Amino acid sequence: MMPKRDVIRTLLAHQLPDRVGLHEHFWPHILDNAWAAQGVPTDVDWIKRYDLDLRSMLWCSAPGPRKDLEGVIEENAESKTTRDAWGSTFRYWKHKSGTPEHIGFTVTSMEVWKRDFREQLRAIDPLTTMDLPAMRREYACAMAGQEFVTFSGLSVFEELRRILGDVCMLESLASEPEFIEDFCNIITDWHIRYWDLVLREVGRPDGFHIYEDLGYTQGPFCSPKMHCRLILPHHKRFFGFIREHKIPLIVHTCGDFRPHLKALHEAGADCIQALEAKTGMDVVELAKEWKDKLCFMGNLDIRAFETGDRTKIRDEVTYKLEGMKKARAPWIFMSDHSIPPTVKVADYEYALELYRAGCRY
Image (cartoon, rainbow, N blue to C red; front, side, top):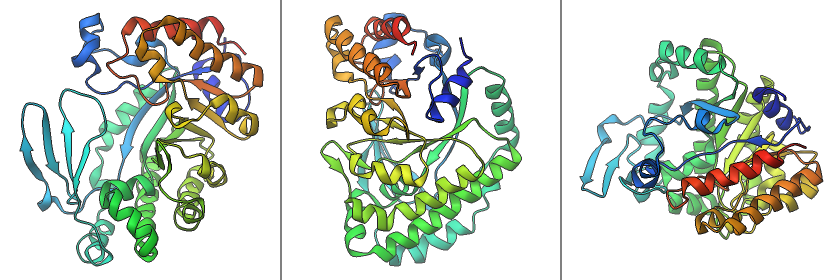
């Protein structure tokens, strides 16, 4: 059987190894909420426990330049509300899974961006945000293993969402494109500076895994025309930097991003993850057009897993596993986002049994 690293490398090259790949992400608090009580150790290494193929390390998001804005706004038994160095306020849940609640934002105009944040960000030396000895140790440990190792971080659209907030971002895409353009240029400059330094000072990963939520359940946040005009050029520049180093690229995006799929491929994505089934996406259908151009990761409908009904779980896994094998399409077996506490350990492990019994191409 091929080594894990070679399996993923082959799939990201849009070719077929000897089996379908395997990866998974587990929601935070899954142990506290459910799985520790079902026998999973609190210090679990998910990759070792389930023999997964990918390991992610490092993380880059543009650092907030206003440390004076940081602080805890409110905290109780259920949640903690904090403001970061971008002046963005979020409520984080202590005992349940899910994305944080957006409360408020400071960078809501070109004037504020230019006056209080733009040049302050440009003045930050990426080296001052790094602990190079620790990064080198983590890198050496990860690369000594069998897994395909990725560096991870954000790109411009997800940075827009977390720094401007969804409302200001969407309004600015339509009414202040010059604000979006300037913001995306500066943010892309930051990411390229950061990762160029990491590649020189830490080492070269097997791949990059970039997070960029382009949509929600009903569709993308912006039209394909707007995306191609205001976002695609920055994707091309950042993703192009990665491709210049001949490093394969996985792009994570939530929601229904299908209208942007062509642009993501054009920008340089080799693999798309996570393909939320509740948006109407079906990886077997997507493969009919894209199997020679893209690898896909995910799309196993978590709602089937949550039922605990083995027939529904088997039907979901079998349809997509056998469908992708029949199509001879590169695929990495994974849920359509993350495993939540509402899925029982035994039911997830049953899905893995089905995978292992039928994963050979």
